[in-house]
Length: 208
View 1: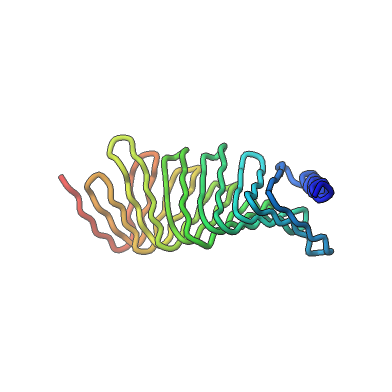
View 2: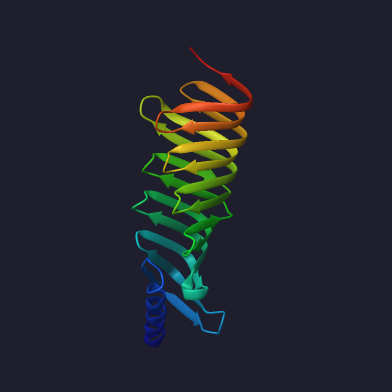
Protein backbone atom coordinates (compact mmCIF):
# COMPACT_ATOMS: atom_id res chain seq x y z
CA UNK A 1 0.00 0.00 0.00
CA UNK A 2 2.88 2.37 0.79
CA UNK A 3 4.39 1.80 -2.67
CA UNK A 4 1.03 2.51 -4.28
CA UNK A 5 0.63 5.72 -2.27
CA UNK A 6 4.10 6.91 -3.22
CA UNK A 7 3.43 6.14 -6.90
CA UNK A 8 0.17 8.09 -6.82
CA UNK A 9 1.89 11.08 -5.25
CA UNK A 10 4.60 11.05 -7.93
CA UNK A 11 2.04 10.83 -10.74
CA UNK A 12 -0.09 13.68 -9.38
CA UNK A 13 2.96 15.86 -8.70
CA UNK A 14 3.99 15.43 -12.34
CA UNK A 15 0.50 16.53 -13.44
CA UNK A 16 0.58 19.60 -11.18
CA UNK A 17 3.64 20.88 -13.05
CA UNK A 18 1.61 21.05 -16.27
CA UNK A 19 -1.54 22.67 -14.85
CA UNK A 20 -1.87 26.06 -13.19
CA UNK A 21 -3.93 24.53 -10.39
CA UNK A 22 -2.79 22.20 -7.61
CA UNK A 23 -4.41 18.78 -7.23
CA UNK A 24 -4.41 16.52 -4.18
CA UNK A 25 -6.43 13.42 -3.34
CA UNK A 26 -7.39 10.94 -0.64
CA UNK A 27 -9.38 7.72 -0.46
CA UNK A 28 -9.66 4.56 1.59
CA UNK A 29 -8.94 2.37 -1.45
CA UNK A 30 -6.85 3.23 -4.52
CA UNK A 31 -5.82 1.50 -7.73
CA UNK A 32 -3.60 2.53 -10.64
CA UNK A 33 -3.56 1.52 -14.32
CA UNK A 34 -0.39 2.55 -16.16
CA UNK A 35 -1.03 0.99 -19.56
CA UNK A 36 0.23 3.42 -22.21
CA UNK A 37 -2.60 5.67 -23.36
CA UNK A 38 -5.02 4.34 -20.73
CA UNK A 39 -3.50 5.59 -17.50
CA UNK A 40 -5.98 6.01 -14.66
CA UNK A 41 -6.21 6.35 -10.90
CA UNK A 42 -9.36 5.06 -9.14
CA UNK A 43 -10.19 6.28 -5.62
CA UNK A 44 -13.01 4.89 -3.49
CA UNK A 45 -14.16 4.59 0.13
CA UNK A 46 -14.45 8.28 0.94
CA UNK A 47 -12.74 9.53 -2.22
CA UNK A 48 -11.79 13.21 -2.24
CA UNK A 49 -9.99 15.33 -4.84
CA UNK A 50 -8.98 18.94 -4.20
CA UNK A 51 -8.12 21.34 -7.03
CA UNK A 52 -7.14 24.71 -5.55
CA UNK A 53 -10.27 25.92 -3.69
CA UNK A 54 -12.53 23.23 -5.19
CA UNK A 55 -13.26 20.03 -3.27
CA UNK A 56 -14.84 17.05 -5.06
CA UNK A 57 -16.14 14.03 -3.13
CA UNK A 58 -17.86 10.85 -4.33
CA UNK A 59 -18.18 7.14 -3.65
CA UNK A 60 -15.75 6.58 -6.53
CA UNK A 61 -13.49 9.07 -8.33
CA UNK A 62 -11.43 8.24 -11.43
CA UNK A 63 -8.55 10.42 -12.67
CA UNK A 64 -7.61 9.81 -16.30
CA UNK A 65 -6.36 11.39 -19.54
CA UNK A 66 -3.10 13.11 -20.34
CA UNK A 67 -1.69 14.63 -17.14
CA UNK A 68 -4.83 13.48 -15.27
CA UNK A 69 -6.96 15.97 -17.13
CA UNK A 70 -10.32 14.29 -16.44
CA UNK A 71 -12.02 13.73 -13.08
CA UNK A 72 -15.03 11.41 -13.20
CA UNK A 73 -17.22 10.81 -10.14
CA UNK A 74 -19.98 8.30 -9.43
CA UNK A 75 -22.11 7.54 -6.42
CA UNK A 76 -22.96 10.20 -3.86
CA UNK A 77 -21.03 13.08 -5.42
CA UNK A 78 -20.51 16.74 -4.55
CA UNK A 79 -18.52 19.78 -5.64
CA UNK A 80 -17.79 22.61 -3.22
CA UNK A 81 -15.86 25.71 -4.24
CA UNK A 82 -15.41 28.13 -1.37
CA UNK A 83 -13.93 30.94 -3.47
CA UNK A 84 -16.85 30.90 -5.92
CA UNK A 85 -19.51 30.23 -3.29
CA UNK A 86 -20.84 27.19 -5.19
CA UNK A 87 -21.96 23.79 -3.86
CA UNK A 88 -23.41 21.02 -6.07
CA UNK A 89 -24.85 17.65 -4.99
CA UNK A 90 -25.63 14.89 -7.49
CA UNK A 91 -24.90 11.24 -8.39
CA UNK A 92 -22.35 11.68 -11.22
CA UNK A 93 -19.88 14.44 -12.15
CA UNK A 94 -17.43 14.84 -15.04
CA UNK A 95 -14.77 17.56 -14.74
CA UNK A 96 -12.30 18.60 -17.45
CA UNK A 97 -9.41 20.32 -15.67
CA UNK A 98 -7.96 21.73 -18.90
CA UNK A 99 -11.17 23.35 -20.15
CA UNK A 100 -12.38 24.17 -16.62
CA UNK A 101 -15.71 22.56 -17.45
CA UNK A 102 -18.09 20.53 -15.28
CA UNK A 103 -20.80 18.33 -16.81
CA UNK A 104 -23.66 16.65 -14.95
CA UNK A 105 -26.29 14.40 -16.57
CA UNK A 106 -28.25 13.40 -13.48
CA UNK A 107 -30.53 15.08 -10.97
CA UNK A 108 -28.67 17.76 -9.05
CA UNK A 109 -29.08 20.41 -6.39
CA UNK A 110 -26.96 23.55 -6.54
CA UNK A 111 -26.50 26.35 -4.02
CA UNK A 112 -24.90 29.67 -4.92
CA UNK A 113 -24.30 31.44 -1.62
CA UNK A 114 -22.64 34.41 -3.32
CA UNK A 115 -25.81 35.29 -5.25
CA UNK A 116 -28.36 33.70 -2.86
CA UNK A 117 -29.59 31.33 -5.55
CA UNK A 118 -30.49 27.64 -5.39
CA UNK A 119 -31.62 25.38 -8.23
CA UNK A 120 -32.52 21.83 -9.21
CA UNK A 121 -32.59 20.09 -12.59
CA UNK A 122 -31.42 17.00 -14.47
CA UNK A 123 -28.56 18.31 -16.67
CA UNK A 124 -25.88 20.92 -16.04
CA UNK A 125 -22.86 22.47 -17.73
CA UNK A 126 -20.64 24.81 -15.72
CA UNK A 127 -17.90 26.80 -17.46
CA UNK A 128 -15.79 27.89 -14.53
CA UNK A 129 -13.59 30.44 -16.29
CA UNK A 130 -16.63 32.17 -17.83
CA UNK A 131 -18.70 31.82 -14.63
CA UNK A 132 -21.59 30.56 -16.77
CA UNK A 133 -24.04 27.81 -15.83
CA UNK A 134 -26.41 26.12 -18.27
CA UNK A 135 -29.15 24.27 -16.40
CA UNK A 136 -31.46 21.98 -18.36
CA UNK A 137 -34.43 19.62 -17.99
CA UNK A 138 -37.21 20.79 -15.68
CA UNK A 139 -35.19 23.50 -13.96
CA UNK A 140 -36.48 25.21 -10.83
CA UNK A 141 -34.44 28.13 -9.53
CA UNK A 142 -35.08 30.10 -6.35
CA UNK A 143 -33.64 33.55 -5.69
CA UNK A 144 -33.84 35.25 -2.30
CA UNK A 145 -34.66 38.93 -2.85
CA UNK A 146 -34.03 41.50 -0.16
CA UNK A 147 -37.45 43.11 0.06
CA UNK A 148 -39.96 40.80 -1.61
CA UNK A 149 -39.11 37.27 -0.54
CA UNK A 150 -38.37 34.31 -2.80
CA UNK A 151 -38.44 34.65 -6.60
CA UNK A 152 -39.34 31.26 -8.13
CA UNK A 153 -38.22 30.64 -11.73
CA UNK A 154 -39.06 27.57 -13.81
CA UNK A 155 -38.09 26.58 -17.37
CA UNK A 156 -36.78 23.74 -19.49
CA UNK A 157 -33.46 25.59 -19.85
CA UNK A 158 -31.81 28.32 -17.78
CA UNK A 159 -28.55 30.13 -18.57
CA UNK A 160 -27.10 31.78 -15.47
CA UNK A 161 -24.29 34.26 -16.11
CA UNK A 162 -22.88 34.59 -12.60
CA UNK A 163 -20.51 37.42 -13.50
CA UNK A 164 -23.37 39.57 -14.79
CA UNK A 165 -25.93 38.06 -12.38
CA UNK A 166 -28.43 37.56 -15.21
CA UNK A 167 -30.78 34.64 -15.88
CA UNK A 168 -32.23 33.66 -19.24
CA UNK A 169 -35.14 31.21 -19.10
CA UNK A 170 -36.28 29.31 -22.21
CA UNK A 171 -39.01 26.73 -22.78
CA UNK A 172 -42.22 26.91 -20.71
CA UNK A 173 -40.60 29.77 -18.81
CA UNK A 174 -42.32 31.23 -15.78
CA UNK A 175 -41.54 33.48 -12.82
CA UNK A 176 -43.57 33.79 -9.62
CA UNK A 177 -42.53 36.63 -7.34
CA UNK A 178 -44.09 38.99 -4.81
CA UNK A 179 -47.61 37.74 -5.60
CA UNK A 180 -47.23 38.24 -9.38
CA UNK A 181 -46.87 35.58 -12.10
CA UNK A 182 -45.21 35.86 -15.53
CA UNK A 183 -44.96 33.35 -18.38
CA UNK A 184 -43.36 33.64 -21.83
CA UNK A 185 -41.26 31.84 -24.41
CA UNK A 186 -38.17 33.64 -23.10
CA UNK A 187 -37.76 35.47 -19.79
CA UNK A 188 -34.68 37.42 -18.72
CA UNK A 189 -34.09 38.33 -15.09
CA UNK A 190 -31.50 40.80 -13.82
CA UNK A 191 -30.84 39.57 -10.29
CA UNK A 192 -29.08 42.78 -9.27
CA UNK A 193 -32.06 45.00 -10.04
CA UNK A 194 -34.82 42.32 -9.82
CA UNK A 195 -36.05 43.44 -13.26
CA UNK A 196 -37.90 40.98 -15.50
CA UNK A 197 -38.10 41.09 -19.34
CA UNK A 198 -40.46 38.91 -21.37
CA UNK A 199 -40.15 37.98 -25.07
CA UNK A 200 -42.43 36.07 -27.42
CA UNK A 201 -45.97 35.10 -26.51
CA UNK A 202 -46.52 36.30 -22.96
CA UNK A 203 -49.07 36.20 -20.18
CA UNK A 204 -49.10 37.31 -16.58
CA UNK A 205 -51.03 38.09 -13.44
CA UNK A 206 -50.14 41.19 -11.46
CA UNK A 207 -51.69 41.74 -8.06
CA UNK A 208 -52.35 45.17 -6.64
